[in-house]
Image (cartoon, rainbow, N blue to C red; front, side, top):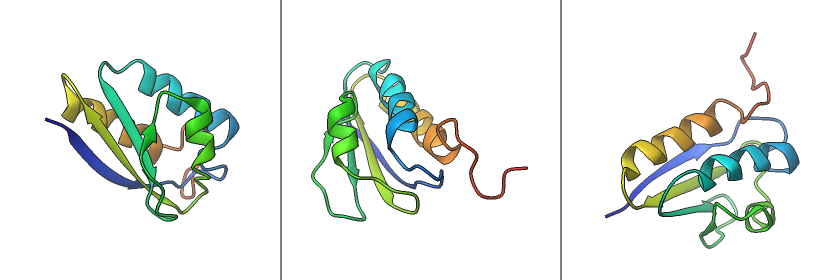
Length: 97
């Protein structure tokens, strides 16, 4: 079984530099296979546990990504990653006070 969710990236830097590192660190803590794809550019899924693979997706603010987790607790894991992305990955997002 696997769980997947699509989410829009709202933080100014997208999945670049520091936000990508935050994302990869969270993905690495999840047991099982964690994948991410940039739906906006039509990229193939890559390992969300690889900083180079994530940076290579070229995810910018406003892009939609698909998160997929295959393993124990996949539904909770994919939701936690989606919440992290929606929350800005440590950066302020539009509408934050």
